[in-house]
Image (cartoon, rainbow, N blue to C red; front, side, top):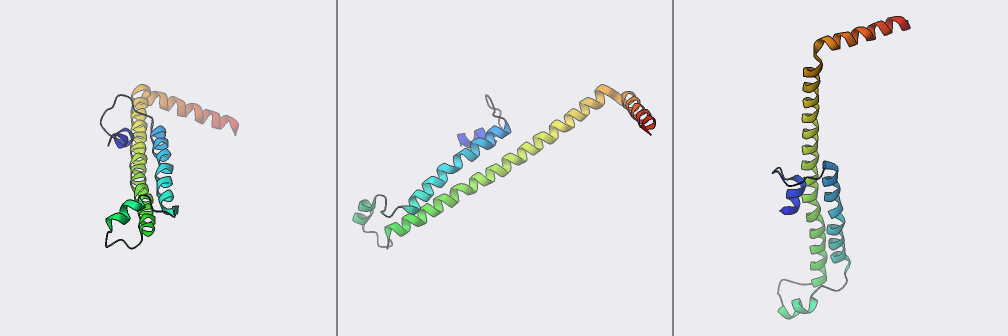
Length: 132
C-alpha cells in the first residue's frame, strides 16, 4: 500500500517525486519481480522439498513442476499490477500536463489581453510585407 501510495496516490504527501521519478521507481522494481519468478522456474531442486515430501500431499505429483508453475505465475502476476500502475501514472501525468497548459494559457490571456496580441500580429504582417 505505501509503495503504491508514493507512486500513484492522490492524497497529499510530505514530498512528491516528479512523474518521471515515480515512473523510474516503478520500473526499477520490475527486475526484482522477474528475478524471483525466473529463479523459481530455473531451479532443478524444489525449495523446501524435504518439508513438502514429509507432508505427503496427495495432489502434488512433482514438486519441481509445481515450483516452475509457481515461478511462472509469480513472474507474470507481478508484472500485471506494475503495468496497470504505469498506465495510471502516465494518465495522471498527461492530465496534470494538460491542466498546467490550460492554466498557462489563462494566465497569458489575462496578463497580455487582446491589444498586445493585435500589436504583435501587426508587427508580423509588416515583417512579412517587407520581406516580399
